[in-house]
Amino acid sequence: MAEAGVLETMPRTMTKETELKKELEKLVKTILVEEDYREEVTDEATRILSVLKELKFKKSSKVVDNTVIPEEFICPISKKIMNDPVVLATGQTYDRPSIQRLINEGQKTCPQTQQVISHTFLTPNHLLQEMISKWSKERGVELPKPVVDDDADRVYLKSLLEKMSSSLSDQKEAAKELRLLTKRTPSFRALFSDSTDAIPQLLNPLSPGRANTHPDLQEDLITTIFNLSIHENNKQLIAENPLVIPLLVESVGSGNIETRRNAAAALFSLSSLDSNKLVIGKSGALIPLIGLLEEGHPPAMKDAALAIFNLCLVLENRVRAVQEGAVRVILKKIMDCILVDELLATLAILTSQQEAVQEMGLLGAVPCLLDIIRESGSERSKENCAAILHKICLNDRTKWPAVMEEEKANATLSILAEHGTSRAKRKANGILKILTRAASITHTL
Figure 1 (cartoon, rainbow, N blue to C red):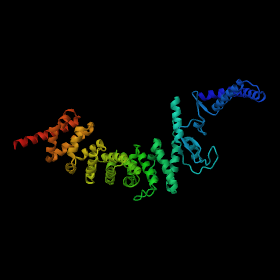
Figure 2: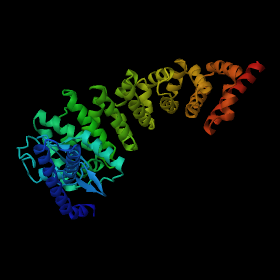
Figure 3: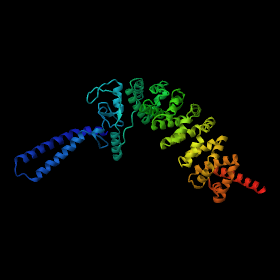
Figure 4: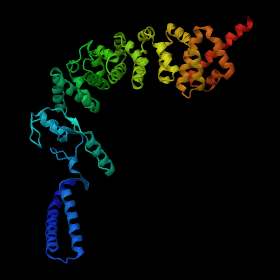
C-alpha cells in the first residue's frame, strides 16, 4: 500500500520540482544581473536548493509506512529492502536470495556492472546488515522475513560440495561459505539430512591421520560438522558415518585451539544420543578430551568438560575415563577453582567406580570437598560434594578423622543436613551416621 501511495504522489512531486527549478532560475538571474539585490534573494535560493536536494533523495529511495528507506538498503534486483546482504565477487551488494537465484539459473555476469563473475562465493556484508537492523529498530520498521528457497539452497549446496573435490583454493572458499551458512541458517543444516553423500563430500579434503595439513581448512570443516550436529536429525547420520568420529577425535588432539574446541563441542553435541555415547567412547575420544581439559584453554576446557560428562553417563565410558586419568585431571581443576560446578558433577558420576573413589582419597579430595561444602554458594556443588564424600567415607575409614574434625570445628555437615537440597540432606545425614557409628565404636573400645 505504501509503495502505491508513492507512485500516486510522484506526478505532484515532479510538478513541484519543476516549479522550484523555475523559481530558482529567476533568483539566480537576479543575483547575477543585479548588483544591489536583496539578501532575502540568496536566502530563498538556498532554501529552494535544500528542498530540491530533499526531493531528489526521496526520489532515489523507497518508502515503507511513510518511512524513507536509504537507497543503499535496497537490493538492485528485487528493489526491496535487503534481509541478508551479500557481496558478489565484483564488489556489488545484493540480497542473498535474489543474487543466488540468478547464479543458480546460470548467470555469469554481475547484474549492475555486467562484469564476468570470477567466482560464485557470496560474502556476507555484516556492516550493511547491522546498519539495516539498527535503522529498522530505531524506526519501528519490521523487516520482511527471509524467503527460504529449498530448491535454490539444494543447488547451491551441491555446487559447494562439488568444490570439495576441486583445487585447494576452491576447497577453502567453499569450506568458509559452508561454515557460515550452517551457522546462520537452520534450513541449510537440515538439507544435509536429506543426503547420505553430503557428509563424505564435505570431509573429502581431510585425510585421516593428516587432518591438520591445512589448519584453516580443518577448522572450517570441523566447525561445519559442529554446526550440523546441532540439528537433531543430523546427529545419528553424522555419527554413523565412519569418517566423522575418528576425524573429530583426531581434531580434538591436533589442530589450532579453535578447531580443537569445536571438535570437542561437536562430540558433546553428538553424545546427546545414548547410542552415540557408546560409539564415541569406543573411538578413544576420552584421551584427547581429558588432555584438552588439562591443558587449560578456558573456552576449550568447558567444551571438553561437557563432552566428558555426557560420555560418562554410560557405564562403559566411566571405566575408560578412570583408566585414562580423568580423576586426577578433574580434581586438580576443582582445587584450582576451575569449572567447579561442571566437574564436580562428573566426579560424582565417577564414584560408581571403586578405583575412582580410592584415587580421590589418595589425591586429597576430602579437605577440598569439605571446603566447598562450607564456603560455596552453589547448592549444586554442595550436593555433589556431599555425594562424593559419602562414597569416600563408605569405602575408606582412614578419612573419617578428618571429616570428624571438620564437623566438630564448623558443623559443616550438620548445617548441610538442615539447609541443603533434598539429595544433599540425604548424603550429609548418611555421612553423619557413619561418623556416629565410628565414634560409638571408638568409645566402646
